[in-house]
Image 1 (cartoon, rainbow, N blue to C red):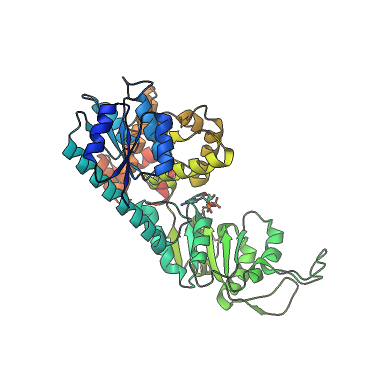
Image 2 (cartoon, rainbow, N blue to C red):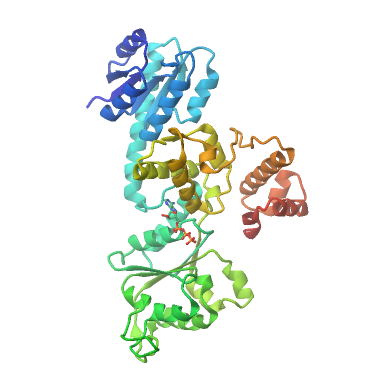
Length: 453
Ligand SMILES: Nc1ncnc2c1ncn2[C@@H]1O[C@H](COP(=O)(O)OP(=O)(O)OP(=O)(O)O)[C@@H](O)[C@H]1O
C-alpha cells in the first residue's frame, strides 16, 4: 500500500511542486486548520509537511503552530516537517519544541524534501513496530513511561512476577505502587486468581485484624456469622498490603506467623487454615528507621522485603512528565467532552520544572481541573495552578530571591543525578562543600535528596 503524505499549504504553486516531488506517495492537501484536521482524521498520514504561515495570519506562524499542536495531540506519532520562510529560525525552533520532526526553509528543493519525507516515514514505521513489539514484550501496559528510571523498575517487576518472593514497593505517595502491584499480579502465574488489596492505614486498628484474618461467628459482639478475611479471599492469588508501615505493632506478630508458616487462624477460631498466596507490600514510610525505633518488627521487615523495589518520584522521570500529561489530557478531554487539546510551551516548561510532591495522583488532579477550567484549546500554566516558566526552566518571576532559589534547586538536582546520588560528588560538581550542600538542601526543602543520601 502506498503511504500517504499530507501537505498543508495555501500556496497552489507549492502544492503542485510537492506533488511532483513526492511521486512515490499518495499526496493529499489541506490549506487551513479545518481542512488539515479533517484530512488528518481521514487519511491518518504518518508524515505531514506544514507551512507555518497560513491564513488567517499568513505573515506570522501562529496558525501553523496551532495546527502543529493539534496534530501532535490528536496523532502524536505523526512526523510533521515544518516549512518556514527565510529568517524564521525562531519559529522553526518553536515548532521543534512543540514536537515537529524537522524543518526546512523555502524555497523548496525537490531532492531535499524527498529525502526528509523518506527519512521521516522510515522513522515513523520503525517507531510503530517498536511500540507494538514493546507492548508484546513488556506487557506492563498499565504503566506509562519510557524514562530509564521507570523502565528499570518495570524490568525488575517483570523478573519477579514469575516468582513468589515477597516484594516491598517503596516510594512516595502517588508514584504508582498499587499499579505496580497489580501489574506484577497480572504477569504472574496467579493472574487468574484474585488480587485483593487492603490499606492498613485506612482501617481502624481494632478492625484490621478481623478484616485481614476473618472471624468466627460469635467471636465478638456483632459477629453474627463466620466471615472470611482478606487473606482467605485472596486464596491462590495475590494480597496487596498497602501502607504496611502503618500496621499496629500488636498485629505484626500474627502477620509474621502467617507469612512464615502460611497458615492463619480466624479471630475467635482455633482451626489452622492453610493459605497459598503471594504477598506484595508497599509503604511510603522509611521502614528501616521504624525498625531502629522499634516501631516495626525487624523479622517482619526482612520477611516482607525479600526484594525491595524503589519506585521513582515523578520529578525524576524526565520526559515521562509530558507523556503522562498528554495521556491524561486525552482521557479527561473525552471524559468531560472539553475543548482543551494541547499545552502551551510555557505549560510544558512549568510541568517539567514542578516538583510534583503528590506525584502522578497530583498530576491527575491538576489535569482534570485544567481540562475543565481551560478557556481555550491550549492549556496554560495558570489552568494547571503552576507558575509560568520559560524554556530554560527559570521562573518568570523577577523576585531575585525566587529566581535564585529556582536556579539553585535545579542545579543541585541535576548535579545529584549526574553524580549518581553520591553526595560528595554532587558537592564537588557544584563547587561547594558537603555541609554547604546539606544546608542548601534544607533551605530549599529538597527532602527527597536527603532521604536517599
Ligand atoms: N506509570 C503510570 N502510568 C499511568 N498511570 C499511573 C502510573 N503510575 C500511577 N498511575 C496512576 O496514578 C494514580 C496513583 O497511583 P497509585 O494509587 O498506584 O499510587 P500509590 O503509590 O499506591 O499511592 P499511595 O501511596 O498514595 O497509595 C492511580 O490513578 C494510577 O492509576
